[in-house]
Length: 359
Ligand code: NAD
Image 1 (cartoon, rainbow, N blue to C red):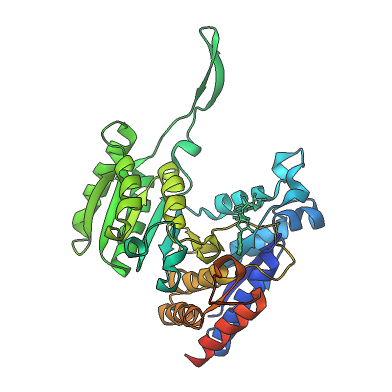
Image 2: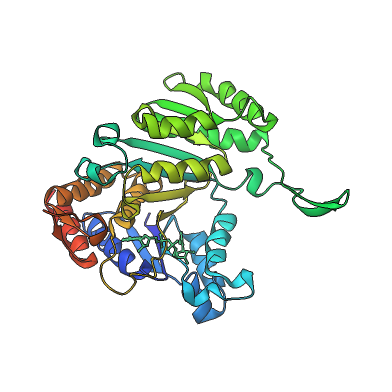
């Protein structure tokens, strides 16, 4: 049966970079992949056209899709909108909520050709390949009660860090399954020496472990994990953690790779329906100039093929094509350095397409 892919270009550089990724999806189609492509408006583009960052028609198409490819949303044009429900990022949050996208996959993968771009020594990061699974719909960002109130004559701010066993088990299983598809090592990150909620987290992870005897489970406190990520990041294969710790650790891990223009991400629900997007934003400072790096979006298509469409061979072919283009010394401005050839967004997309077709 044909599978539906929804393309949401969004704002800023979004339309430029998704156009290059769509070329690769169409090439997959020509290779026999049975997919239907549709597009829709989201973010500022949705607000401008329909007065809503998540127009009804977009949400309906998103619910019906097997996978979504998103560019990026936001920009100064909409920063002044007084009604925060109309802000572009509400489009993204709405999609996450309505689709139940609870597992955020953030790979930190360093192409050896870009080892010099990292702020760490090349020998510490060369060959780095970590997958961080962040729980995306629970934890302290959503827990109730929350607020700021007057107590004993002064204002007090409070939030609630809460996870149910079911929520922990759901992300835990996704992480064990992920480890099985990779290096079979899973590190669960918590603060079980201080926080009861993460004592439960650790207990549930340990309870699941015997069901995955081929995966080696370890535990690490979040403060140590932050330290180990910058000291010896290659010790990690898959890391799993809650919403807040994952937010922080995945950004730190992403930066080990040097360029934000290279990093894809995925958010999945229980049916493996997923939203795939680059980790970066809409880069309004370079929008419309044809200089944005499309590789994070192209690599997001590879993740889509692997995790929602179960086409690992095509995914690998895209990743190999990206490696080949870097071997050929082609670079967009954000990853260029003396001795490399600087190319435009479109030239980079065309080069990956050519490498993909010749693989
Ligand atoms: P940003 O990621 O858009 O840009 C940060 C810097 O990285 C800029 O200098 C930009 O030019 C550069 N950059 C980003 N992507 C690049 C690419 N593909 N190629 C080359 N250079 C690239 O972050 P920001 O400036 O903080 O935010 C800009 C807008 O994007 C804001 O409106 C923000 O809310 C939005 N945003 C959206 C998302 C999303 O859609 N998921 C994520 C983060 C930020």
